[in-house]
Length: 265
Image (cartoon, rainbow, N blue to C red; front, side, top):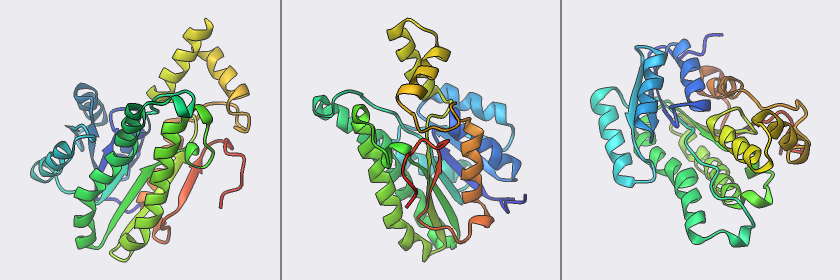
């Protein structure tokens, strides 16, 4: 399928690994050049090198407003301001009883998962609007629609993103920029590897057994009974970045293996 992305430039936050890197690979195959952004400088440089000549790397801490402004300057000076922005950076944050989360726990998740997106779009979307064409895909989560009690700080940040995306999508669409969300669930990424390794260490089992137990006890509605693959999420992101998604505005696409128990509304 031709996604109509030849000559387009895509900027992907959280691009060093997981869903961000898988999305970069797909967009490169569709003819775009990609700019990978990550807080981990060595990792993002390595990812860009592995992906080839049309992949570029920039390091930035999206929690820092001045670094985001610097990111925009570097992007314009060294490459090109993007036609597509995919916001895939984030953390799961602290876990435990919601009322036992400290102010710092809440702020950490909010800065990493919510404000990082706002700051990124603030510096890149206006140029897309002036051009009259753009795509924004925000990585949300199953947690926005089906919150888990021990992941409250993450739930709230992701629910905020879903609300923000819907709110801005109508304004941006009037200027040719289509904003949508993709909500994965339990994808095989470094983030969930770390979660499963912690569970495995606590129970004295290996990661495979920890994943099996997590699926049985914590994600009983995940019908496929496995972790998703980054490329399965990237496929949906790629569609939303393409010309084929020209009538999709303010939507939230679930890529969750059935993990969310309710119907999509």
